Image (tube, rainbow, N blue to C red; front, top):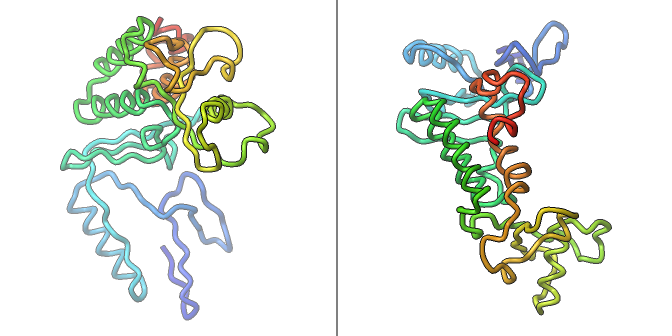
Length: 253
């Protein structure tokens, strides 16, 4: 970390493996956080030393100590992504960044399963239990044992319906609400279920007002919702390596 004289310009390097630019021999990093693995006392000593060198009121803050963490890998890369991780604090709190569990456009079952999966891995450190948990969820989906309410997808209409050039599933759902007399405008939230097994997804949706039981398409929810939310987590803890040459979808059949 470098402080350059009177202009109060701070150039810093908190990581040396990626995301850096070289300017006149100095290193700038494109993030504002630093993860350190080591003894608590040494971390606190490092923090104190850095803060003594920083000018004015600028301080490097300690967020927390974490006992276990998962940095999810980007596709095709060996390192974990900087902006997609889950950390377990000493108090048992799980901090999420970049996961579907903190998004609003996924079915409740996806958020529920992803959160539970992370709890098993972080709090228990049990990879085999995590594997079996996902396998059981897939079995329940295929047998339609999971209530349809947990599979409703919620999305928000961002512009007038006539402005949409492509009839995506949430647009098709909005048109159904409109036919039922709802005032659909930007900001309106739709809730729909994907049913059937063939044809365009937009032609296979039912809004919550139309659903009459567990008539959802299991494979859609497995392939398009569940696995995309968990496969990178599983790969990050080595589960894919156990089944070389097979996709997770093959394993869970």
